[in-house]
Amino acid sequence: MAEYIAKVNDTKKDAVADLKSRFDGISSFIFADYRGLTVAQITEIRDKLRASDTEFKVVKNRFAKIAMKDLGVVDVDDFLKGPTAVAAVPGESNEVAKALFEFAKGMPLQVKGAVINGELFDAAKIEAFSKLPGRTQLIAMLMGLMKAPVQKLAATLQAIVDKDGEAAKPEEAKAE
Image (cartoon, rainbow, N blue to C red):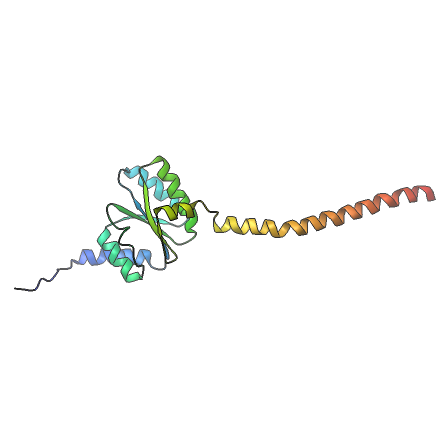
């Protein structure tokens, strides 16, 4: 029996190379089922995510599996079943997850799972992750906590200066 050799089309090679170039250097991916979305709705999602430098791309599963494997992103085969769109997140993945779950409330978008900095997240875990405060929010909260004691000390010292200033005024009036 003759051995079967798969013929690889140049356009398929180019499609995989394009995905690899788009996903290169990105460590966080969120996978979603876009079944039932209109082109206008997908465009709306893309526009919203573009503000955070995130690309929302409808992919062919076989090409995405090959590109992800070549880039070292493993165990994503379960997410690449059925109609799939991938949000390639170069920055803060928490904000993108929040935005996708916001869209999922009003549209037939369904988040399948994610790979965040090499760690696999199923749908429930990524939803819980999206409810956490983002990195910038955490930094702001930390800075507020660090600023509070210094601000309280400054207010206390100012109160002492004001009290001493009020106490000195009556004595000056008696001297005259």
